[in-house]
Image (cartoon, rainbow, N blue to C red; front, side, top):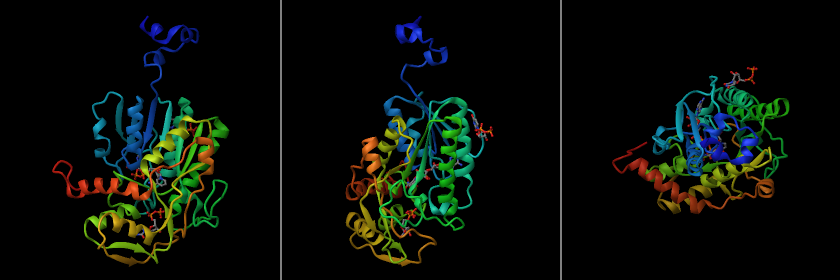
Length: 338
Ligand code: NAD
Ligand code: UDP
Ligand code: UDP
């Protein structure tokens, strides 16, 4: 009787199955793979805040339990230690698929992008869930078009040291579109450009986390190559907003999600100096192989169809990350060094 009252007359006519009726009407069951990582944990915060029932799958390869520990004990939150390369059976409405070693230091020789994505698409097919893939601007490789629009097919070395990541994500996009066309799965594809913010893995080798940790530790900032290569840096809260709009909206994508503000690595080093320590030294190092020379998103499509655009500039976002890194590096007694 409670169930019928809760759902009202219209719902009764539609014969809502018991399992659905037992839940509060609008509570979604959302799976976040890689939810203990940098981006995933911020996404989980927003979903929990919205009242969703959230399941996180993570094998802690680069993520940390500390990133989600504040939700443990909340009945709407469940944390599963699991490698997405292995199949898993769950019942959910939406899947945000983030699990993936995302830094060049970690992603080499890892099958997560292909096998993990296949498993999560298989899961989406079995339970009829909507599936969002977090792809990357790396699918554009060393781009010959600037800025990059979603229509550009990219310039990727298929046998290079980065190919496990960029080709892996390209395969992941292909699999998602094949499941969409072939099995009718609702998919959403985000191509994420370089993102930074609190909870970023301190030593995973990405440039913003490297520079910030180096400046705080009074080490020289390591600029690779001549430092004239460019990237566009997005604050994590802007990304999470874009991902949620994409998931809830009607468009498959792909959509570029990034901040068009473009910086050379030398300019980035300068912003870090201004924010943390004007006396920080710069040390040049050999660049990595196949490093893209420039990268900047064209976000017209996301603006038009998702009504989304980033709102936090690098100079506004960086101090928020610095505060978090300071606490993790030098501690407040509770958390200690990461
Ligand atoms: P991250 O390393 O902090 O998060 C990835 C999470 O996935 C980690 O918690 C890790 O432990 C988990 N994971 C890795 N392999 C797994 C596996 N086999 N099974 C289960 N869990 C696994 O990185 P992030 O920056 O939060 O990236 C999240 C997603 O966004 C990734 O898919 C990444 O490719 C994509 N992306 C990020 C950026 C960026 O600049 N941060 C840019 C482009 C794309
Ligand atoms: N899979 C999974 N959880 C599920 C359903 C499928 O992990 O709930 C895995 C399954 O083990 C397989 C992959 O997803 O490896 C693809 O599944 P699909 O059913 O599309 O392909 P098939 O098993 O028919 O080859
Ligand atoms: N980079 C750098 N110093 C570092 C780490 C990276 O100059 O300590 C450069 C790197 O060569 C690349 C850019 O910063 O040109 C961005 O590198 P990152 O690994 O952060 O991201 P991605 O290459 O995936 O865009």
